[in-house]
Image (cartoon, rainbow, N blue to C red; front, side):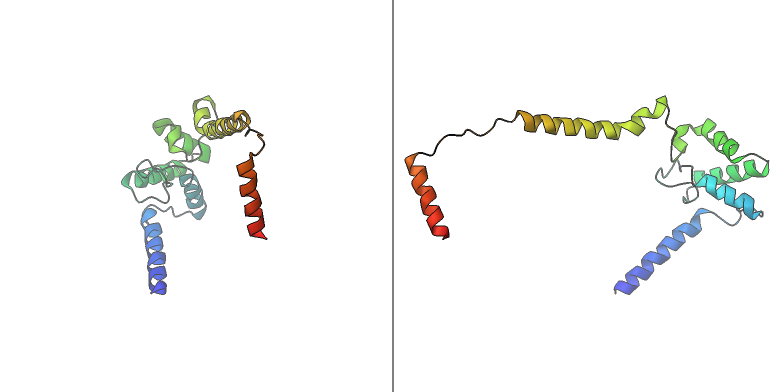
Length: 152
């Protein structure tokens, strides 16, 4: 049963990968195709948002793959092809957006939240009142002695 489920999972994974880049999209020049795939892996599918356009089967991802390949065939460099897409869709289309003032919140907010949480925990622990050091009364001493004798 486990083998059947594992085989089904593998086949589903392969089927998903096969749906992404269609043979009709592929460039005849292997070097250009490799460049197109490398660029496509840097660009986010705007429909799926957690996949690159190379991995997505969405229609918009298909259109972007075709645009990238057309730009490369026209002689664009990798940077020019990426800039073409970014100019139309903004930095959001990049899977790894640049570190610049407009994206500081995106890049640095996780560190800021961790620092605030650590500072809050440190302040809480530091300001917590220490337990009082009161001596035991007679009843508490007897109870403690009974407990200690029972353990032996």
